Image 1 (cartoon, rainbow, N blue to C red):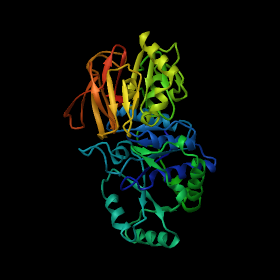
Image 2 (image 1 turned 60 degrees about the horizontal axis):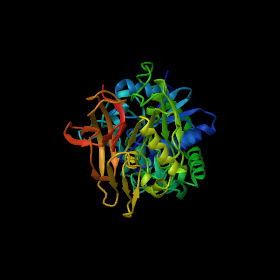
Image 3 (image 1 turned 30 degrees about the vertical axis):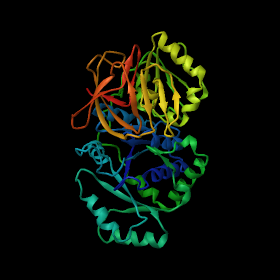
Image 4 (image 1 turned 135 degrees about the vertical axis):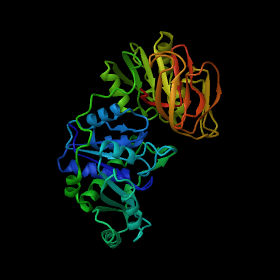
Length: 437
């Protein structure tokens, strides 16, 4: 049975959703509640912050890329043993694919999730009322049950905002969060700086929880939570077939973009996972019949990776013995011959694929993708179809050999072949999320 759930959303990206969710999770934990969380859409870094508070895996729920059964199974798994499940939306409530699908609002409607609306009020006064009123009327099947005001300058500003809302509609303001320099999470290209890289993270999380406890009506917030309308329909979730029976998974700040749903799905299918750190110059388990290099920020650590001899020898040995070696995005670049960083310096990579990548001349590629395999392998037979996403600035400056897959965009338009495969080594810039059928 799914736990009572609330989904935090906002009018636009950068509204303060992440800090609000972190503060609520922390404040409720201080009350002795067991809380868990999920993130809407394709995002690797926000879930790491959630898990830093809860100590639990944070699953992504993506209603464009995931099958309904996968969504419901992950929702049930996320809430297991929790008193309350908190979701964080992506971008704005109505934002999704270019055709209008896949938004946070779509997920709320599909799963019957009550929405807490987080509004960035730094430059807002009485204009908050018509802004919020538009979203309250947006879709009948999306229920906004409460408002949380973020980046408020002080009590007088809060009173003005609350009065403007109360004069126009009945949806309750649950509280407000003041502007605070400790609540600013630093960013880099493609998202927030990862939690492991922030020495002040513990102070930031503690401050967020403290401010939520002081300024938000947590008792009312708890009363607004309810189980999803799909509770009880779960049958387990296994988004992707396992790459092998014993899978060595790269894991450190250079290779942190692995979805918990993927890893847990592999375990549920009977695979054994063993982790290793390329940045610590660790080799994958010599007994592994598959190696997975997920995405991340290898370009920020390319010099260390180029000098990691045990890591290199271990990957070459794995490929030589016929293990399936698979890389996504950053992992794909490391499987190639050369990686040119943003400063124009070329670094020698593993050379397992005839590919060279560069960030010296960025070429943004962002969007959900449909992917069809060009050849049979552990992921499935030739023609097997998946859904995933691209989110990167790198581009291939050189590619030879066989392509890994064909991709299409949300509208079904062909974008050509992607990635590369050579022997038992394969990869591409696409992050796989779920099988298509």
